[in-house]
Amino acid sequence: MKIPTACVARGRPREFDTDKALAAALSVFWAKGYEGASMADLTEAMGITKPSLYAAFGNKEALFTKALDLYQREKLAYVSEALKAPTARGVAEHFLRGALEIYSGEKCRGCLTVIGASACGDEAEGIREEVVARGAAAKQALLERFERAKQDGDLPANVDPQGLAAYLTAVLQGMSVQAGAGASRSELEQLVEICLATWPGA
Image 1: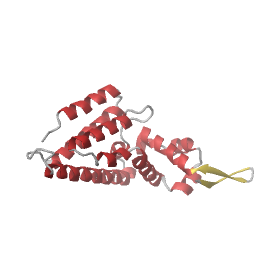
Image 2: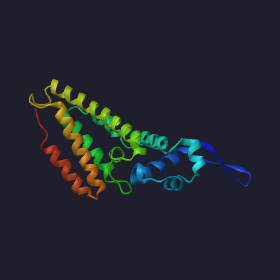
Image 3: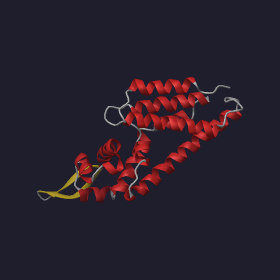
Image 4: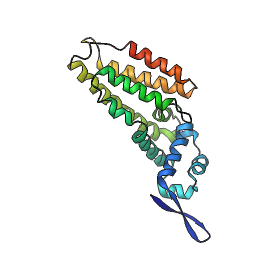
């Protein structure tokens, strides 16, 4: 989809591909975080001017929200598939290995939602609340899946589904933080293997 911008070059309106521009913005936010990504960073990566950005996407917060939607559609597609796994351990393994692929990427490391949730400035409060709310929804879906697993006898009777969901979430967040700090893929794989090796069995 192409949208004409407010820029005029030699009397002709300039056009840009909004999908490509949004993908470029996502890369910037993913690499630098919401607060670390300046408007100059964004417009340069997107190949547009600031007025064009505002006209097509709204303000920076609105742009981040759209980038987050794109991230969830494309990068976190494995989440919905993970919840369909036949066993609780299968759910965990799908989550962990899917996250491993995302967190150990060449250009962008870690999880955008974890990065966004760490935003702490007054300007970023709305972003932090949005990211936290999305994370809570994902954790709730995971909890419900583990509750079904316990009812089906797939998890031991003494296992608390809420605690198990919190544990897996903590491991995933920890992997993201370590990836952002430069942990190698092999180091992240060790975390995956340890988590799966200690997973409770029925």
